[in-house]
Image (cartoon, rainbow, N blue to C red; front, side, top):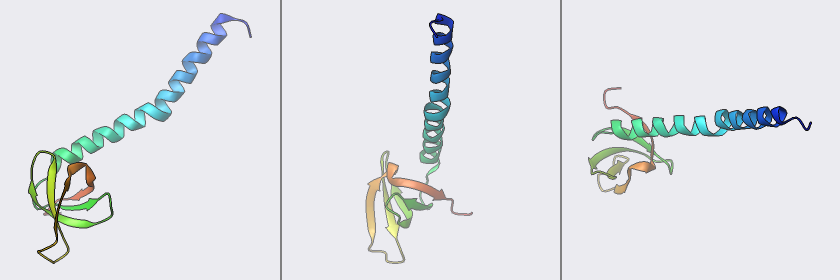
Length: 91
């Protein structure tokens, strides 16, 4: 157990394990969210992080206005990061 090669291999294995268990999935999820944010357009049907479904009626760089339900008076501005799922208009 006092062999330095053993310790080097041990540390490399732990680092590789941490990369594949923690870092790689985070990077994959971040890339997916960036693609989702880039694909958002006016008229898309979205699900928010609070669980509400609505339609995007207006957008700025970091804010969207979402209309909920069939009531035209229920329009709420929110950050784009609050959107977790998008369904395109024609889909």
